[in-house]
Image (cartoon, rainbow, N blue to C red):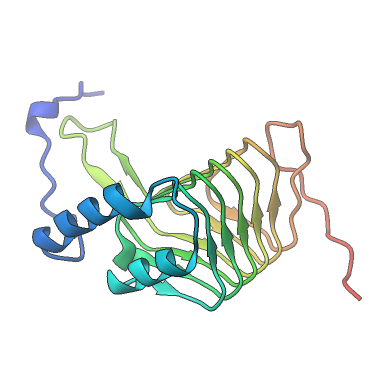
Length: 184
């Protein structure tokens, strides 16, 4: 296996999605306003939309939320994004309707090839279908897809596909699959 050579790292295939000037403006706006302690969701929704995010109706966005690239974010109607959530979206992140993302969750869409000297960047989208609940401190890896109605317990690390209606068991390091009860 070759040793990593970070001096050989190049990123020619990665597309940021907007010109550097727009990215710089977002970094300034996020640092001064968006990712702060200031309360309020309506103005946060407006800022995200101004920078190209697709944000549904009545989305709640708590203080200290971080979004890398708003133009690579879509959030469905009536979803909640809790305090200190970090959406590190080098690729598309799509959050369905009626989803709850609890405090301190981390969505990571990029990683590196540790098995090649050039430490190549690899990005993959994250998709949450409708009615998911991502517990506090959950970490989602690049390429994660949560089916409709998935519930993830606090602190889990998840990658890959999680079947619809899967509920994780609190206090375990893995996801166990249980069918959710039918709704009335």
